[in-house]
Amino acid sequence: MNMSSSGDESDASSSSSSSSSSSSSSSSSSDLTQAKPVFIRKSKQNHVTSTPTGRAALLARLDHQSQQLEAPEHTPTSFDGVDDTDDVDPETEFDQWQARELARMQRDTKVLREQEADQMEQLKRSI
Image (cartoon, helix red, strand yellow):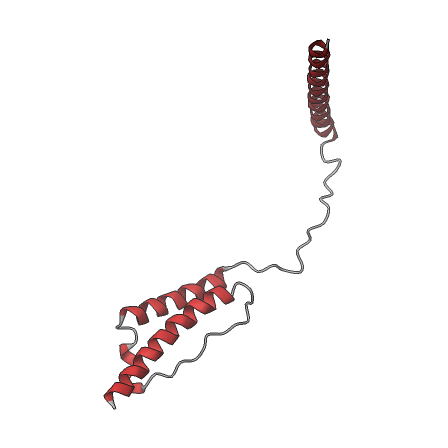
């Protein structure tokens, strides 16, 4: 009979560790999954956390639960639409636009000059 009770204990500890590892991997896909209940005899209940695997499983489970509680949830009231802050400071915005436009023009002319230089080099090689 001791053989079966020790077998039950090892089954309980292995299933609790596997349930904690499976719950951590499956909870990423669904937040509604629950841990699988494991039967532990009343005489053995205090000894589960004294074993290294039981303690590790318990710590992993508690850590996972605390992470779920701390995780920010997406609120449906938040608005991810267009930021309409135009005309706050029109002069500064216009100056910034001119600087961006100048940078674009310089970049485009540089690319055109490089392309023309490549074409001229290819023409010189072909002659």
